[in-house]
Length: 128
Image (cartoon, rainbow, N blue to C red; front, side, top):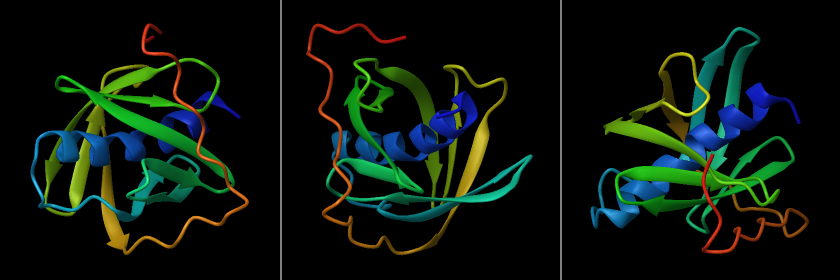
């Protein structure tokens, strides 16, 4: 997977975790999100099972303090900051050169049984 594709997928997975950890029930982050990239629009599905999907790639997220952490199952956590305003969310930091804003465009679909949510790295793993 390319770094840009990994980053895009991870950008959407983390906001759901952040809002859940803050104890807020609104706005709900589950849904289909759209990001505009240099390669055109990209759709990302965020589900309540702690997964986010971009094509056939699946990530897992968690919240640590005011940071959102994701993993693609490679044993590495990637960390980003986020800001949520209604159906728009902005992700920043990490390996991003500039903040990325996504827009919710619909509800989530069910995750097919054939797509496995990666196991999280051990609790002692460091974030990059």
